[in-house]
Length: 245
Image 1: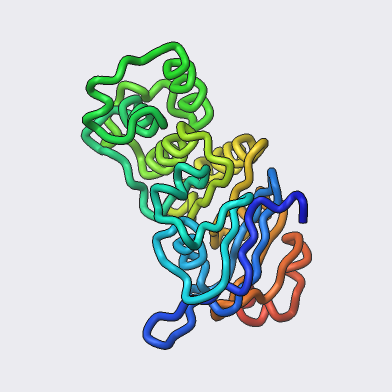
Image 2: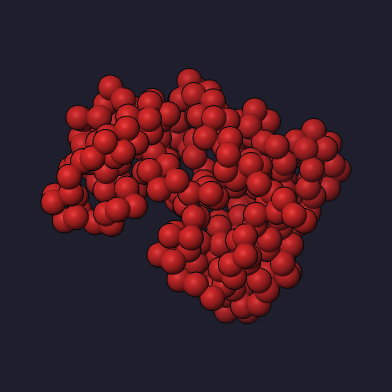
């Protein structure tokens, strides 16, 4: 367990008596790109909500390195090194790509701060490297509202990268993208997952096959199967409840 950076154990959360996640054990290792799949209502997004502090579990524990995340609130978890991207891109559409990235820099936490913050050499280099990584260097002066849906997804990933998280949580990062954008996103995740751990929720099995080191299948809030993509896609239980439909 020495290589485990995230340990979720006996995790349960109930909403009005319904267990959205039920006694789940889930582990992510250092530098691992771990994909979570499963039918709608399986508890995938709820799992990410609990890891990032958006939802409090009814019982169980979530440990990130040596920290107990269950006792922390969202901004503390973010500052501890956990970055979360939601299903729908959340960017400042009236600001440029560059300003969106700059706002996410750890030395400033809001729009007002960016107005009085001087761009030093470290920040300028960070802006260039991150915008390169997410295919937006040529779009730095463009208002985020003019980007395509896929580019907005990339921008939000870039905003997370500005914070240098050790653990990235990405909820359906290729939803609504073109085939070419999906291919580029697969390359992007392959690059940015070197040196950090990444958890991805996704439904596109071709995309999952192209990126995943390990796949966990959830069903009715419980772990149904886990292993390589080849292992889970040949599991009769997974075929029955998910892939077969």
